[in-house]
Length: 169
Picture 1: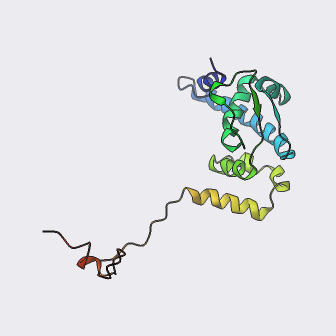
Picture 2 (picture 1 turned 45 degrees about the vertical axis):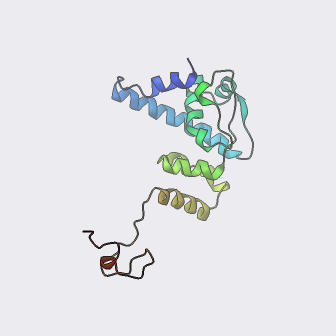
Picture 3 (picture 1 turned 90 degrees about the horizontal axis):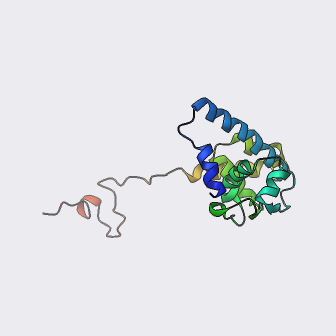
């Protein structure tokens, strides 16, 4: 069985006791934070190796490393083949800094996007800009509603009620 399927079976087990599942995620998030602290300390260094080697490097189990790779995959310069990944699959952790920051904001992972390591990567103004860009990306802005006496935007120069708003007989 591919590692990702094994990870998902454990991490998203709906039959598991909610308290145990919550503890599982709390423990995982602490491990994840530790890996990000190390990665962000040297953001321009590409970390590469097999899944097993990286798990050993960051003191994680192979399945925990799989969960980490699943979480960071959308932020990588080149995504890893996580669907068919095995212990001996060579993966890269070369991440796009802006994309990673925005994905952390999108995930509402404040314990990650507020890590002090970000301060040496982006200044406060840049972090705020990236934060706001991500928050606004999910906001739908409706245009001004056209009133019945306003000129209609179809270009006819007529009012809505005399143009496209007229009821057809």
